[in-house]
Image (cartoon, rainbow, N blue to C red; front, side, top):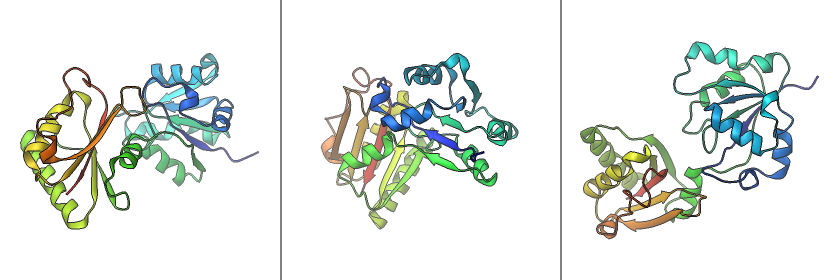
Length: 237
């Protein structure tokens, strides 16, 4: 019997057809799978159905921020029984800014091959399009929610960026995009460069790099046009 594999399957960043997410050979491979670990059942079923799978025949485990460490082990049971399986996040790449990393680590400890499939990453797409330093960068995840802690963290990241010429990449819950953007304008030097990348891969995608000084008075319309749209921020001092 072939060794069962955990396949990491990228998901759309928005309402994109499967052909815009996965190469055709990856789609054919996903169609051979019966077992999946997913972040959200409804969207996973819709995506897999669009890939041509009969979701009535599939078996799902759920892995999200509410999954306890004790539940992780059971999610890999199909592998132990000799079945390859796939893992999906809600959007983009599994295990990147995603709770799936713990499951991948567990698969490695169990001696199972882990195979990442090619697909969209909002972080890398934003970095590609930013014009900032793509040789040295760091993803910082979510910044603190409390304004005083958030502002302190922004200043620390700007200093680190200036010291190492390192692009700092971070994200926010969409409804807080505007408050984070305004905090960046208030906390950062006028000469630091800021990229705002909104709703990537979608028809209304917006990607622009300006200095902090140039952004003032030219803010994206987070209240209407880009309301609750996913956004990646990149900063280079």
